[in-house]
Image (tube, rainbow, N blue to C red; front, side):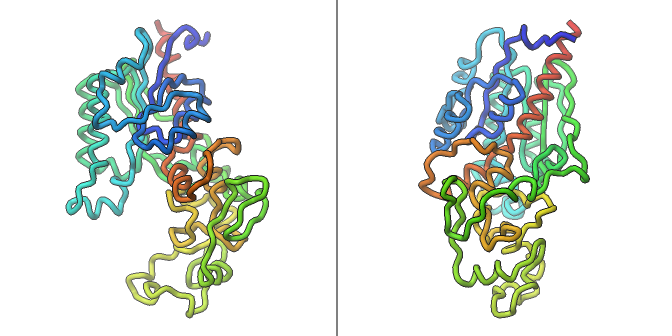
Length: 353
C-alpha cells in the first residue's frame, strides 16, 4: 500500500503543550506539529529548543478560537491535541472538589469550545483516569458527539506501551474521517521496561550533588534524619524497615499505617512510581534510588518519563521548576504511539478513496 500521507497536508496544534513531551512524540512518529500553546512562559525555551516549533504563550480561556483557526493552513487535515492540566482530576482533588472549585476544571470545557469552533478532523486528549467519572468529561464527549465525531476512549496502563512507570492514563481519540482505534499495547508484563533498564548505568552521585558531566543529573540534599531513613530503607520496602526513632509521628498512628511508599526506595526490576512534579523529593512518594542514598535526580526523572538524553531543559535555576516541567509532561513514548495510530488512521481512510 502506498503511503498516502505524502500527498496530504497534516497540521497539528498542541494545547497545554508544556515543554513538549506530547509534541516530541508526535513529531517522532512523523506527525507535523505547527504550534504549541501554554500559559506557562517558563516552558517556552525547552519547547522551542527541542521541537523547533513555535510556542504561543497564551491563556486558552482568553485566547480565541479565531486565533487558533488562523494558525492552520487551508485544505490541511487539522489535528487538535491536548492534555488539560490533570491535578484537578486527581483522586485527592475529587475528594475536595465540592468544597474548592479549581479553575483548571474549566480548561477541558475550553478545549471543547475550541473543538466546537474549529472542527478539527482529528482530536486526541490524554489525561488522568479519574476524569472519566466527571460531568465535565461527559460534556466534552457530548461536544464531540454533537459534531459527528467517531469517538473511542480507554484507560491504559502505560508500561504496556513502553513507559517504565506505574501510571494509568485516559486516552481519547476522535475523528471526523471515520472509525479510529486505541493503540494496541507494545509490551507485556514480561517485557516491561524497568527502572534498571533506564537509570542503572548513570554515574553514581550523592544527595546534594550534581554530576560533573551532566548538570541535569542533580539530586536534592537530604536532612540528617532523611539520610538515616534512606540508609535503612530496602528496595520496595517500607518505613517498617526503620528504627523506631526515625518514624514520623503519623506512622505511629493507625491512620498513617497505609502510607507505606513514602520515603521508600524503588526496585531495580520494577517500573517506577508515577513521575509526579515532586519526584526529586524523598518524602513525596517512593522516589528513593534503589541503591544510592538519595532521591531521584532530575535526569533520572526525565528518563523515566521517557525524555531522550539530549532533551534540553534549559538552565537549572530551580529544581522545583524543572521537576514541574518533567512531571507535568505527557511521556514522549506515549505521544509517539498516539501519533503512529493517527497516521495509520489517516492512511487507511485515504487508501479507500
